Length: 299
Image (cartoon, rainbow, N blue to C red; front, side, top):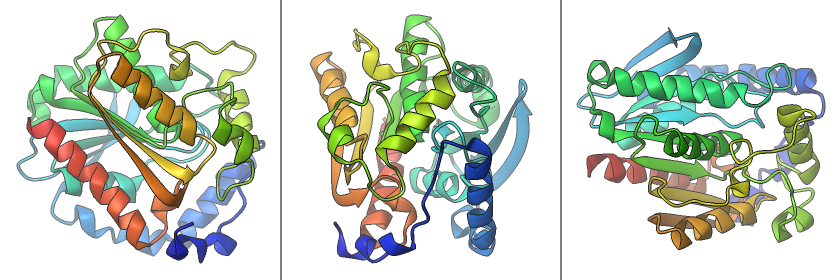
């Protein structure tokens, strides 16, 4: 493990996603402890940040000067925890680094709202953004989707749905440490069972909350999709010590085999969500998300 990250491991709180209410309270307490840092996000000082509701879905829109594209951004948290405030620093950093309008989506959370509620919220916002691109100061062909963890899985599912339903055009997808496969049969899922922040059991609990008694479809678990052709170009980032590492790598490989341009970055010495920890490698991870989107949306 990266030495800077390893020093933080004893300080990382245990997260139990089996009880959604408890997990939310713990995250809220953690966010409150860091509230001064979050509120003083230097990345958003020179941009307009607006909270609004888009066709019933709460969003936070970050508008840098001279934006040249937009990205619909989905937070992580196993579809269970997190909100616009907990995602504020990451969304602001991506807007600053990419120079793009970032629309952070406060999608409905499970288990109160199971699949496909979160995907429907993403698709609603994507459709609105495409129809109101001029209001956002961008063109409809310069809209990307992206997310972290469960949010990256939603982004991948949104790209599949838009392709299948001839929906709004998506020019790029950013899948950061994506959760894609409910079967949990990869080598990393079987061997990284107690890694920092995210464990195999937590991922299993997240899938149970998200799916309920329903069987997974490709729109819930994109790794189940049989055909990945015709999807937008992708950037896929994985962490070395992460249960979902191998499903992200496999998805990137399958996209390549289907003729989709892909950039895959496997970050050695990192673990799931470690980009939130102040370290050199974390700064490089977040900076790369911005630079990748800047290149993709400027083409």
